[in-house]
Length: 236
Image (cartoon, rainbow, N blue to C red; front, side):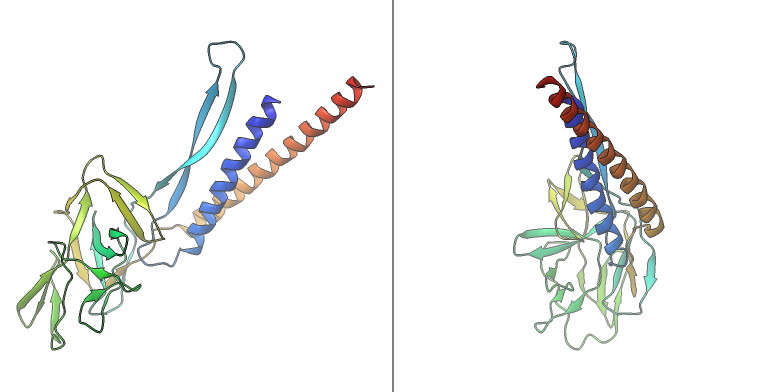
């Protein structure tokens, strides 16, 4: 019976990893997307008190913060971050962090994301782009200027040590703690950061997970057949 529980937890973790891999592949072309992975941990029941059962649990997700490729777009409101850091975004659920810098002014002149959420400056306020700001430039520190006149500074922040980042919907993260200005980050105008997913590596991993799942499924079926035969023999 213990082997059945062990196999079940392993199969559950593999299924969870398969879903994560599929999501990575689906977002391999999504601007600012961060690749996810699943960490397997071992849970030992009854250790030191007689027979023990070891179970592999794949219930922890980790996010790769590796820099994605910067792709030139030439867009005035396309920004990419070089180094560690995130754009600050205002959402109905509160401030969120993102690496996706494909912005545009809305009807009110506020700089917003592709989903319509307002981009915040270094002080946490919305960024306003005047309608006559034709000659717009952005410095490496995120300072937006038009005709040599500073307009605002993009709020590029990084979580403080110990702060946990919780992924929400693809390219958005929630910081469970404090954030601070990302002093080492650099802004590049006219570029977007591509997804950091390695499609070939993810497809290879998907094949490995699928084979491992099929092996576990075969073991579970054999174990089930063994238990059925043992029960049948016992009650004869």
